[in-house]
Length: 228
Image (tube, rainbow, N blue to C red; front, side):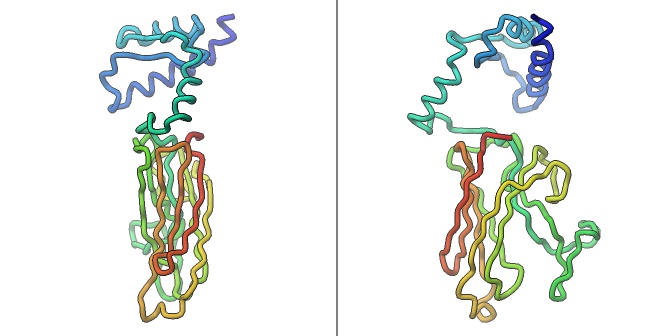
């Protein structure tokens, strides 16, 4: 029976060990086992053997109901969860001014006499970053050209925090919002228009919003924040 669960237990021990190596959790004195599998004596003994010397391993009463109780409490009052850690790095794909020596030549795009760097991953939040309930991260952009009638904001995610481009390994597309740009006739005289993009974190979903500040036209989308 022990051999049946050994691969899973080994992965759990390795994962806990990798978490405990992070600077932000140094000095942890208590390790709580929760969830249905935490009732397994085999898992309890393995965790105790691996980490009992450095911290106290605690198995709460009714450990199998802990997750269910937490879900019910959150449903009744979402504010009980004040901070979450982002499971992934989230951002959008943008064009930036091309900087010789900084950006790779294969990302160079020449448009209307200007040099742009394509496929830039602009981060809103990094993997494992703490985000408070309702925390909003905001960025401002301009349409790529005057007279543009629509702008697309593509949202990407990655399990790494060192991504630079949306073409980097492990980056995947997780959503798109499309914003109509009306009333463009006076752009040349009034200057470039501003598109304000924001992501609201901390809940079970990321709420993504894009606003055309000139017309107040707004589009919204949601992304699952708990899956990775």
